[in-house]
Image (cartoon, rainbow over all chains, first blue to last red; front, side, top):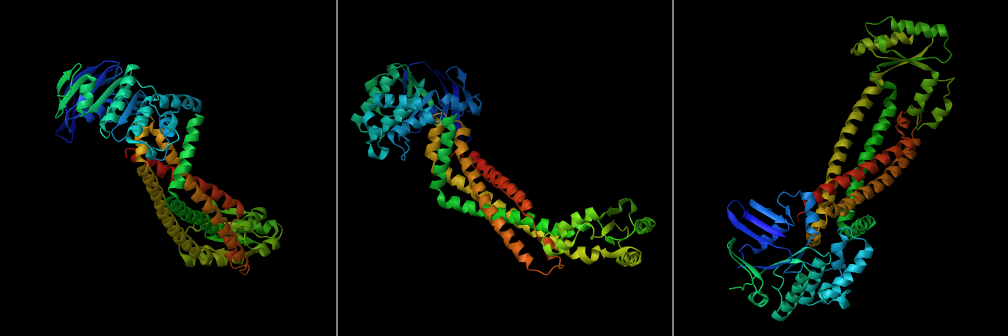
Length: 225
Length: 301
């Protein structure tokens, strides 16, 4: 589903955020990207959804070399991906329903599809009874659920999560991980950047560890270390 | 498709409301600059009315009495054509009474009294003469010579009527065009800045839109529509201003004595309507282009 071949990403002329990264993530896998701050985890995610382009190497997503993808095709690539962020990135002037519907609206889905799919996904994340609330009326965990609902409502092939539990207490973090796990079980490939030891050690999924831009460990059913 | 159009329109209106102060400033600046553009058109047209008789380097007009006989007319023509060294005989133009009457309608556009006295039967026909010499004394000598020909009612010289108006026309046109271009530039910049502010205010929304797969055009269109609307609103306001200005001017001119030439400065309503359409197009284009550039430039907020 995702393949990195000797990928190097530089910031400026000589600061390497990612160096010679090579790995393969098959369809339906759940992968943790771990490492300290500044190790290149978020850059890897940004390379996957073409927010960044590498200086060297090739990034393949769903069989396409996305380095060579025309800018005009990038939105269509992203329609097959969901993105979840540490700070949720919800639109504060929109309700829960509107936030989730927004991602369908902007890709031109008709109203009847929106009316059908949004309640379904809100049910999945356990927020069916809060669709009229605004984000400011929700807890951090609930806001992250809305963010996950927004990312998943289009049934993406890939979900990219950047520190989704970073702002949450351990119990709420576990709930979010459980949600991501159930999304992964539907066949969606999940790539999650984190430096939360607990969730990595509890889930025991594939771990790709980064250190100053280098992939230093790629382990099936790994732990944080 | 309907969902996208409806979304774009909704967002345009919402954004317009959110930035109401900046939007109002952009609309007003567009209105003032477009009013000046429109005024330039009207001033130009008004001066053209005065100068219509002297178009094409005409330096002298020999007016022929309406009751002149065919023989007299032929004699005048032959006299003029007999001087190819001082007159451009190839371009010697004769306006019969009907053509002269049509021309008079423009010259006396605001002088209903004079115009009502003129008819195709009573108006003099005219020869438009382009002198080859630039020596004013020589041209004046020619005029005196023609004035005494049988059937000639009078001779008018461009240098007596044309030069001051022409100089004034060029000056006024230069000033108004320069000012309107500067103001139009200010209006486009203000619209550009309004769109930039709107985009920065909605940067989170734009980021989310991009990440969920909205195309750049889908994101841009509401902003472009917003700028286009601002330009168009400004143009509508300027059209109102122009119409009012022209009405006031027309009424003011009516108070001048007939024969002073000021009456020629009246611009007909049909011409003003044409200018208004031009203003609406310029307003929409300026707003659309300004916002389009801003929307493309600041898409990576």
